[in-house]
Image 1 (cartoon, rainbow, N blue to C red):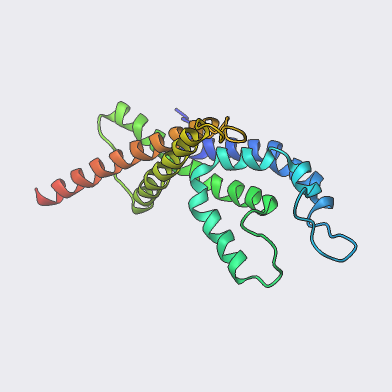
Image 2 (image 1 turned 45 degrees about the horizontal axis):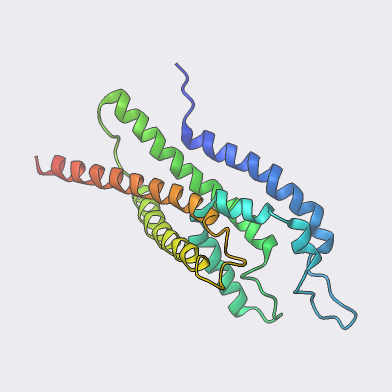
Length: 204
């Protein structure tokens, strides 16, 4: 009987949502990308491109949040070693594309977690583990823990007198990180159990 695997279903769904809510709006805003003033200087503050993109980049980042562990260091290196003085780290176009591409890989591994859980319920045992699964679990758990701690700190700071303006909705940024940290630790627990069982089998 044909059974759709989540490792293929989730990346496909992620890509479809990203095309609809990230890449299509991004393509419509490209005419405003890196506009320059009469002196040839790039418009940074109040960039028409940033206004045009709106929440599309935020959607890409929140939907694929663990991808930040790859995308943000890559953009930071691009910023450090470029000679055009462009703020690559905060570039919404590159962020949107980067999170979309790496996000497909992220959701593939999330799908593998769900597939293994289903297999555990069906067959009574977890399938064999793989090193890429363990790497994804460790990176997601550690990185998302840092993100959750930072988001909670921002929420607490926003409640202090004189600092609520602009940070009052910071709690919204806790929801997605909490979801991802749960995925990370669930995956990590599964991979550790798999490794222990494999090690015990080798000893027998």
